[in-house]
Length: 635
Ligand SMILES: Nc1nc2c(c(=O)[nH]1)N[C@H]1C(S)=C(S)[C@@H](COP(=O)(O)OP(=O)(O)OC[C@H]3O[C@@H](n4cnc5c(=O)[nH]c(N)nc54)[C@H](O)[C@@H]3O)O[C@H]1N2
Ligand SMILES: Nc1nc2c(c(=O)[nH]1)N[C@H]1C(S)=C(S)[C@@H](COP(=O)(O)OP(=O)(O)OC[C@H]3O[C@@H](n4cnc5c(=O)[nH]c(N)nc54)[C@H](O)[C@@H]3O)O[C@H]1N2
Ligand code: SF4
Ligand SMILES: [Mo]
Image (cartoon, rainbow, N blue to C red; front, side, top):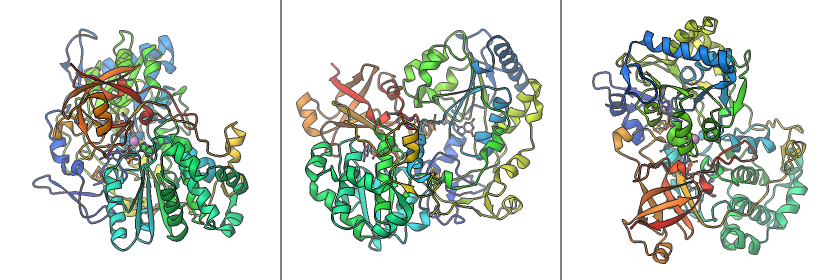
């Protein structure tokens, strides 16, 4: 089986058929050996008492309690309401919201055949990595980079705003193996992250100042004669313009803006210049801030300076040839509207949608301004349907809840975003309760709505999506062979000039700055919020308990505010107030706070009530890590 969770690693998993205990499969060279705590917790999550096992509706309307019904009754209710909403308000008032709860092609994409067929609205998938993808694309054409196999040969591994020790444990294991053979690991992170703790060099910029730091490092590379002029003239465009900007970033200016000492800038530049080849890992975390996309652009250009083709890793999904549009039928039917996922709470609160269908996602805890989203989804004129494996906060608000099987209970193909190995993921048990998978549900609903023509056989649909994408045949995959996905060439650049564009002509054409731009970050306490090793977003609370409702505070800041370890504080801003317990640590610098992401405060208010629905100019991404807050001790 493939682990289907949104994760850099996409492990292959063997399940003991007697005990149903999961183990790391040896069939995947990148992920063999061990599972992370979530993988190890899978059996408990599959058989959790939080599972949704039967369809539920609220027969007396919004505020009444749920009643268990048959699938046919539930589908009747859903279809009737859907038809009514389309007739009265048009298909643009029907919205489907999903993300990567299960990354399988069938689970994630197949349902969209129905929604596209009827012309419903969809979101722009901007919540996670989109801004970074678009940022890198401005300079490289597509955003794919180095593969995990390249780690072993690398002499320098830079983790820039990427806490791989927690968020990508198998990539991190490869990095540590390379380190034990002499490679140098650098972490660029405002806090002493788990990754920084094991690094040879920790560079500590203030949050949101990485563009300045990258220019400073670029200047040092150029001034020290480390730039690969031959590579630059052969494969790149606009280096002169970039150089001119970089030269303005003297060590003094960089230190003033970023807080990073000249010696560290020099060490990093020297590492780039002398330790080759290198890979610069750019985290999703670092691009989820107001300066996130700009940071991603700036950092991605550093390896090009020293002559490495695509010497970065961000996410390799765009290096594969999988045709998702054939699964979603978006090649034939277009959604009537594409709306911001990051700013969804604003639209839903205003009542722009009358029918909302959620699967593979728990938006009530994971999207910005969770409070507004709840107000919107509970409006009398909004009908919410949720297809879920577990009773999430979103499911609990729904008018209809439909039970979904987990990856133990269904078949699928999961496309990774770091390595390129795929396997046909087979079920190990029958669906629990009356849970029914996404393909079955999509087809039954489509038939009821009179658009049964979207119901392709799932294997045929998969085959079409994977045509030309595999090194090997689809039949090999079905037989259980491990195949690799074909990968685009590293030295190919899909920019207008066919080169790495330091000066992005695409950006210029769109009226954006052709070069990465530094903007001063906001003043005040910045609440960084990042992944926790026990949870995948809001999943596994049924296995490991609540996400710790804590905030880490620097000792000097704590002293100034009269805070002691274990105190309860209100962490608040103009959007809301979340009560958390204080943990004092010098792992965070002054002015920076840290909390595990997507937690719920002691007062029941989710962290995301604090996060604004502001979107980034490039790619429309979120600004989670630009959340400014104040602290007040709870009396
Ligand atoms: N504060 C803060 N918030 C953030 C972020 C942050 O950094 N800070 N990061 C954002 C990012 S990067 C992301 S990717 C999003 C993630 O946001 P979500 O996708 O909402 O994250 P999850 O909580 O993992 O929700 C996935 C849901 O899918 C369900 N699921 C799992 N398998 C299946 C299946 O087979 N079928 C169906 N129907 N459902 C299934 C799970 O039970 C779970 O409830 O969160 C964002 N939210
Ligand atoms: N255990 C676990 N692993 C996961 C997930 C999970 O939920 N749990 N989710 C997966 C998903 S969907 C995602 S998006 C990824 C996220 O994985 P990562 O990309 O590693 O993101 P974060 O966990 O947010 O950590 C990013 C790091 O960037 C640092 N950072 C924040 N702001 C700045 C800044 O301005 N400059 C610099 N230089 N650094 C900064 C933070 O301190 C943090 O250490 O993880 C994936 N893997
Ligand atoms: S969550 Fe990630 S590291 Fe954990 S088992 Fe799944 S793919 Fe592997
Ligand atoms: Mo994400």
